Length: 247
Length: 247
Image 1 (cartoon, rainbow over the protein chains, first blue to last red):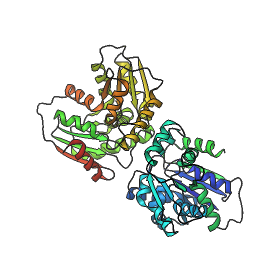
Image 2 (cartoon, each protein chain N blue to C red):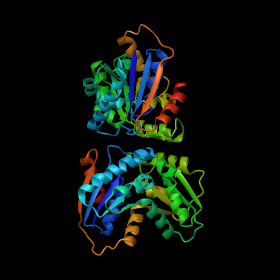
Image 3 (tube, chains in turn blue, orange):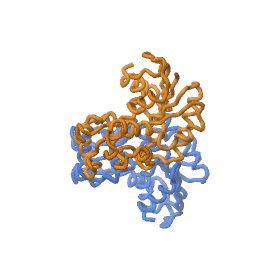
Image 4 (cartoon, each protein chain N blue to C red):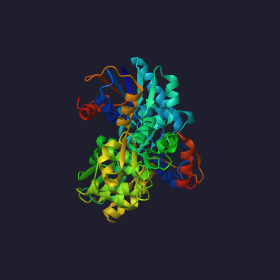
């Protein structure tokens, strides 16, 4: 199988990492819209327009599947992407909600969703989790986390101050959904802040769990072909991919 | 005179505010490229492409002058904008350097430039200041300041931690160039951090000083016509403009 992975920028590489570990695909085509990142502050119509352009781009490759790594796109543009695409399109929100269900023994568990402003406003995670029977939900737009990660700040004083700003008035959650591909990079600091009993839900692991269940992967591919595209500075993306994915 | 003010987003309204105070223009057309903000992390060719599109947009209005409020665009795209435009195009970097000169009694003064990554990498402020005889220069890309301002964080613990991160190893400057239109909003906190003896140079004041010197404003207009355009969510821009500019 040949998969296309779409993200607004480089964060989706954390999802590619999980796909590689599971050896699902013979070929992985990554497209990061680095010229127009971040999507998380844009409005719905703009996000949909950009997402459809990504589907058009992927039509060059005769794909079997498109994985939308970006939470914001998954929240707003899946129906439109599915309409435009010639293959199935899966997002990270449904799979994230299912992963939370798998990780939590009780429907009374308190789940905190952290994401961009756009994803939080969409209420997509809440809708999915409600439909699975969870009602004890909190959501917070943690807009500073993306720029902090992009400054390579994964711990320390500023991050602690940001946690205080965002989480001081929150009920300590049983599970924390990392609703943005950048957030796995601050997962250790978040785990430390919320304590070991809090389950962290990661989009990459969630989508891998989901694909394993939904698709019939008869073969595994330990050395898939990989191609990386970006709307700006593809060289920088390829360099980061090499480093993160240890290619 | 009819002026077009171009910015990557809403930050350029701080420049419009200065233009309004000086009552230079009969009509002010603002264009914020809110669908593609921020420019400060993008590469040169992308910035030039977007800037030329803005010039094309302004051709609808038969302008006498274009003011580029965005430091990043001023750093990278002025020659190309001038080539495309039918009227003069002025940026905030030359005027910022001249304002620093006016504010400082000695060429030995230490000047610290804070700006986006793209503006700092361009070395545009350094080049202008060198040509004015200043050689005691420091520059720092303070990438977190834009998202902090957009979170409406103008003081407090996170901002102090960010100041410490960026400025701990800097020589205390005699002047601080606010090389991004967002930064005037944290000017009081910066003034407090660097002390009252540090001169803060603000793009809006600097460009007003510059225009006053370069152009012959025979008339003044206390109630100019104003039009606000944005590539995304123009309503939000108009609302912020009303609030910031007290329209």
